Amino acid sequence: MLDEPSLDTPKQPILLLVDDDKNVLAALERTLRGVDATIVSYHCPLEALAFCQYNQPEIIISDQNMPELAGCDFLSQVQALWPHSQRIILSAYQDFKSVSSGFNSGAVQRYICKPWDNKELKFIINKALVTAQANANIIDATPLCANESPVNFHSILAADPAMKKLFANIRQAATANAPIFITGETGTGKELVAKACHLEGYNQGQPFLAVNCANFTEELMESQLFGHVKGAFTGAVSTQQGVFAAAQEGTLFLDEITTLSKSLQAKLLRVVQEREYTPLGTTKLEKFRAKLISASSNSIRDAVLDGDFREDLFYRLNIITFILPPLRQRTDDKLLIANHYLKKYSNIENKSFLRFSSGCIQIMNQYNWPGNVRQLENIIHSMVILNSGTEINSKMIINALSTSIAPLAGHDNPQSNNEQLTVARSLAAHDISPLWQVEKQAIEQAISHCLGNVPQAAALLEVSPSTIYRKKQAWDE
Image (cartoon, rainbow, N blue to C red):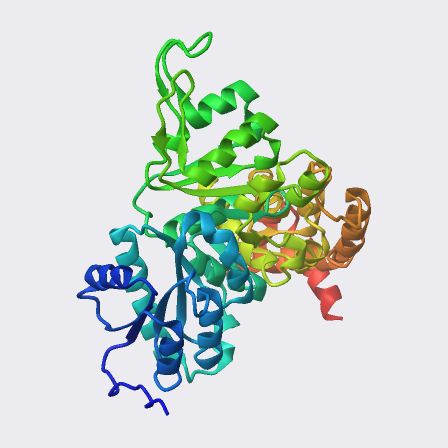
């Protein structure tokens, strides 16, 4: 019978290393020497699993390809024992597809590519140690605290639980050296999510470059990506660096990637697989070192089924996928985001707006926002510029929505703009006060402003004092 493997309760968190190659284990130990953790190593995953039966490892780094037990299966069993552990897979870059199921199930939380970068590895582990300490502090806390208040995650505002879950997934995936794909309707904030992935990663000090693939012809796009040498084509009067090189060890974000031509898709596939490319006009291979994030507002699966996008490239890019919900589904976020932009543009335009009327809020909540957050931002900016006062009312938002051009496709919109505006106008009727109430409010505000001096108030309102006295008497009766 096996002795029950255990450790005396350590003051430090346990960092468990598992790899069937003893040389790899030794290299990991050397690299991580000095971290604030107790390092425990096993070259047999079954022995490591026996250890986990009696000890709680806060962080686990496991190889994927092991003879006794695959890394994903090992981490899945550890997850069942210790669900709050942080589970990291170690595998060759080209094998990542085989561990994608581990990501989908939650057994794998991070990915480190072999051969690893020592700086990256230390960054990931030190960050994991901070998270482990935070988990230890909140492990007995009530679950209510997670979703009670709005958060600002790298300039993405949200109170909606689905968005907070997205933020947690970004933190987990950002340190993985694997492609990330972002999908969502136009205006949902795909580039902001890409920037958040960059800022959460170890390469946050390196460049973040964004390219919209729909903005270039095929020839210009190829040059934009790969760069070219002087004389590579007509008009190439000088050597130019492409974004693959300019991104260095940072992040390259390729938006609307489904618009790439088939020939460029083939070349991009080589970059993703081999991590190398060739600038136009030369045969010299260059290394691609950046994290690659791509996105599309259209369904990439539909593009594959229609034959417009390579299936092999799809599987390479679609390893870690973030799906951004449209604004109409983010019930808790509409007013939060609207207030943010109202404050922002009131300051920029030197206006005095402080709030939205109840009728305006009702319209914002029921409007479908086919252009999502970008449309909401533009509408608020427009209202601030074209109006004055302290309150945005229903009439202002109806006028702004009447001139708004929403996207024509790419979303499930159960109502047309005209239908929604009809609803908005109906709602606005509840926001319109009777004339005598408006008149009374104006007179009372003027009298209050003049500290009770009726003649001064009458002068401001451009009426006679007797008119005010007569109306006041009628209200009192």
